[in-house]
Length: 278
Image (cartoon, rainbow, N blue to C red; front, side):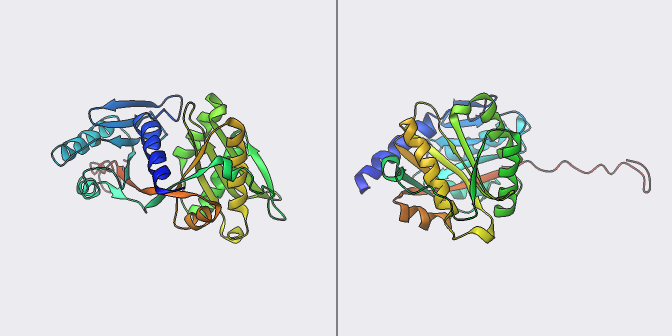
């Protein structure tokens, strides 16, 4: 894609998936609140700011308002998804000053489904693909994520289960299996009425990296998107994934950094006497 097409696609991405975002779970709510678009959800699930229209005069007050909103709802955490074309230019510094902690940057990439749907989908020798349709399959995905990324993500588990239960046409998930052992997993979310299918959670355990599993899962999802008539695949790519995606023909739209706010831990109860029962 040339620079002009990439800019047009980025504008469409902002309009459809940020300003016009749809809830990613049945109980989630997306709303325009002042100068931001945010999602909130009770219990487990993704809370966050998807888009903002700020300047140097309004940014600090708006950040404080979102912290107060999510804290008031009792959220354990929320994410402010910052893109490098967002304004003001120092928005990241302002988020950090308000107590939000940046995670590693990711590259926002997009590929034409028409160019990707013809990629070979045959998995490497010794690997079979299992389509995820139920809780047992989701647990296999979570097992891979824990071993590939070193973190537990109960919010993601709840989100995937919710979509499979309430909006099965909006998600496709797959696990690569070595016999009975899951070694890679990924999902694709397809918000209705948009030009994009999002590739998420692509993780492979260390022993199987560099052997074509990730590429296979991208190709598998590209064919599913083509069958739905979706024109673009979108990925928030890690540093490890970006070179693979570039070789497959994905272009770069920009860089995004997740800034995380975490609720303070409740104060310890020190009222119990030493040796007593709290």
